Amino acid sequence: MLYALPDHEVMQNLLPGIRDRYLSIIDAVERIQSQPGLIPVAINPHGNGLVYFADIGDTPLLEWKHIYTIERLAQSDAVGETFATDLEILLRDDLTSDCLSPRGLIFHVSRCGSTLFTKALARSPRNLVIIQGGPLQEGFWAAITDHWQHPPEINDRNILMLRNLVMLMARKRRPEYEHCFLKLISWNVIYLDFICAAFPDASVLYLYRDPVEVIANVLQETTAVLCAKGDPLAGELTGLLPQNTAQMSNVEYLAHCYAHYFNVVLDKSEDTGIHLVNYEQLRHSKAFADILARGLNSRPDNAELEQMRKQYLYYSKDDTDTTLFTGDIDDMLDILPSEDKQTIKSLCNDALSRLNASKHNIYRSA
Image (cartoon, rainbow, N blue to C red):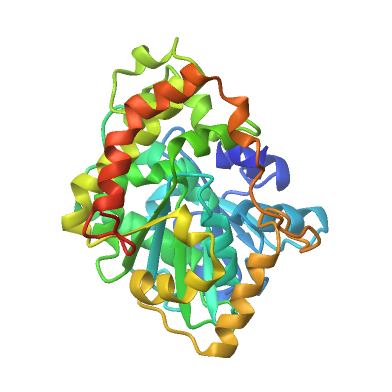
């Protein structure tokens, strides 16, 4: 699956030659300023780093991942100019002014309804919704952490680079765009304070689910975090020594990841003003407007709300809207042996209970 691969490798395959069409920063800035459809699509973190740009025109981002919009356009030969330029371009303060600053930042644990929620948001033509943008999946973080040799430093240089990267992804390529919402990949939550420091005015939402259900779901497909086992990134994802993750079962490793994500959210909740929502509430369409209002400070009118709520009728990972959503698979949990369920509970249930009872939870439990 595309999302399990490094973003720059994906783009080198989808857009052959993009790495070799190199522009100096001066030339790249000129092209960006003259072509409103040019956006960053990947970051190659090797060497001094490169940013890959592609012109997608005014194509709306409606697929369940940013990278699938690029794939669709590439397959139909609908991508315009492409080029690579130095990562240092993200330190410029004159890139472009046609951008929307994120109104909301959406973090999640994976398989928790976040795709449903963000695709519903994207059904409004007023909303530019960036769903797990390619450059933020791996490339940017690898570049500023020296491939996870240390956490990203929260300093002016790094914050400016992240802001410019996201703002370029959020160019106002369509006249009806008024608001931008940014959904991060699940493990980006470990950098919650860094991302919130870059966008201090944005509302922040964390969507989560019982990790037993998440892991049962993940094991039916895959997840990019499994590729990191034993590597330096695994230390960031779990809060453990990377070498200690190498021999873990997939279930134990994922449970350590999700427990770590939960604890990061709990530790940073006061500083970030984050709002929490459990999948048990999120999955009901009647809660959608309330979550928008209380979690993202967004209050669309009734007509717009109904347009967005239509997403609840469909399976969110089918971008053709031909598969009706029939509910969760009843026997999904049966694929997990009882000992695996107990492992997950022992590692995650304390943090899960604290999330449910947190004062930052929109639907706080007793």
